Length: 142
Image (cartoon, rainbow, N blue to C red; front, side, top):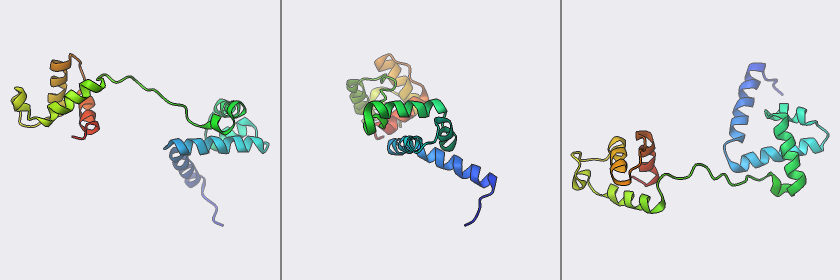
């Protein structure tokens, strides 16, 4: 079996740790492995070092497991920041985007982030940055 150089091992460790944080299922498996290692006699500090977490995180995993068994290790809903545009406003915006900007009184032929930002300010009274408007194009399938 080939032994990894320290630098190679560090790079691989970082890549694996990043992959573990990629999805909800991977994070659940990560916590599950941490609890399993603790059940096998490793301390929270040892597990934290092995898994690239803080000891306090591992302690939280154990508490969650003790309170809720396997379900306690699953992700809880993350509400995130409330949307600036409600569903009705997004619907109206999608309808507007299906039209040419010229038909709405603008001088341009095509929509872009800057024009959409201006349009949202005019119609809804909200200031959205150009980058936010570019994300809206994608979210509204434009």
